[in-house]
Length: 130
Image 1 (cartoon, rainbow, N blue to C red):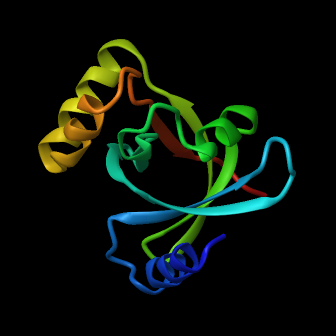
Image 2 (cartoon, rainbow, N blue to C red; image 1 turned 90 degrees about the vertical axis):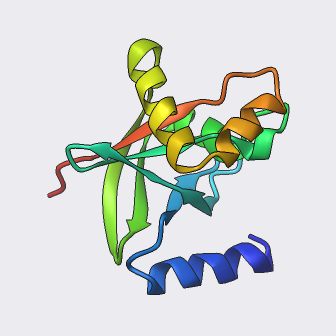
């Protein structure tokens, strides 16, 4: 992880009111633990929505592929660590979430305009532990 990401991760973990979470995945090829800061949006019923935007790049970010390979991950959000399961939204559910996301953060609409791929939206749902 580069220096800027490490500093961002530390800041997120200290600030319980941040709109950014730390997504902890396992590399699908390397097996290495990866920590990535990601903007989140309320998903309803205690869930979080995240967008695999990569700032409008032509490819999805690496963390998206890691989630596809292993959807059970952890996040650090609002001062706590939560075990979650990621699922990709589609159809009307995705459209509704997209409207919510672009209304509160217009830059995501700009990211979509920069690329031909549909930006994936994932719901992170807490899973029972223990």
